[in-house]
Length: 280
Image 1 (cartoon, rainbow, N blue to C red):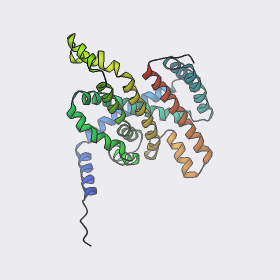
Image 2 (image 1 turned 45 degrees about the vertical axis):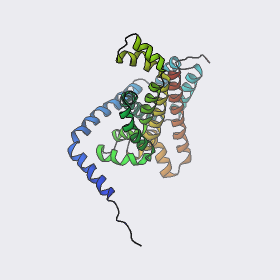
Image 3 (image 1 turned 60 degrees about the vertical axis):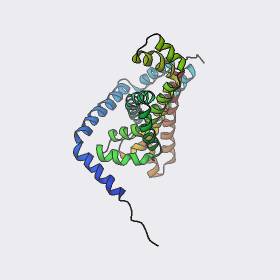
Image 4 (image 1 turned 180 degrees about the vertical axis):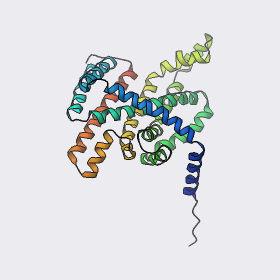
C-alpha cells in the first residue's frame, strides 16, 4: 500500500519558533519587563500587612462589591487558607491570575470592540479564537517556556493565550446585541462614533462583557495552576508536589484553597456584572 509522505509540519514550526527567538528577543524582553513588575506589584500589595489584616481588608472590599454572604464566605475561606499555611502560595496564585486577567482584558476588550464594528475583523478572529480555545492547555506551556524560560512570566503568557477568547467573544457579542433603534436614536441626536460606543453600546453591553471577563478569570486560574509545571509557583506547586509524592491530604488542601479563590473571584465578578448589591 502506497503511503503518502508526511508533511514536515514539525520542522516548519520549529524553524518558525527559532526565527522568532532570534529576531524578536527584544520584544520578549520588553514583555518580561512588563509582566514581572506587575506580578511583583500584586504580591507586594497582598503582603504589605499581616495575612489576617489583609484577609479582613479583602473581605470588606468584597462586601462593597458584592453581597454579605459572599463577604462572609471570603472571610472564612481566606482565614482557612491562612490556617492551612497556604497564604504565601495563594498570594502567588492570585497575583498571577490578576496579572493574566488584566493583560487579557486590556487586549481582549479592544479586539472585541473592533470585531463588533468591523465584520472582516470578526471573520479573521473567529478561527483564531476557535484554535486558541480548542488547543490543549498543556501545549501552550512549550512555546511559553521557549520564549520566556521558566518562571512566572511564561505562566502568565500561557494563561493569557488560553483565557483571553471569552473576553473577545462576549465583548463582540454584547455590542452587537445592543438594539438597533437605540443606535439609530444616538445617530439622530448627532452622536459621534466615540460617544455611541462609550455612552450607549458599552453601558448596555456591560453585563455580557463582565460575563466574558468572569470566564477569563476562571480560565486564568485553571491555567496558572497548570503553569506550576514550568515554575510559575503558587498553589499549583502544592498540588504538583502532592501528585509526585502521592500525598492525598496535601493535594486536597491545595485543591481546597484553589476552590475558595475561584468561588470568591467568580461571585465578585458576577456581582460587578449584574450591578446589584444585596444584603443577604
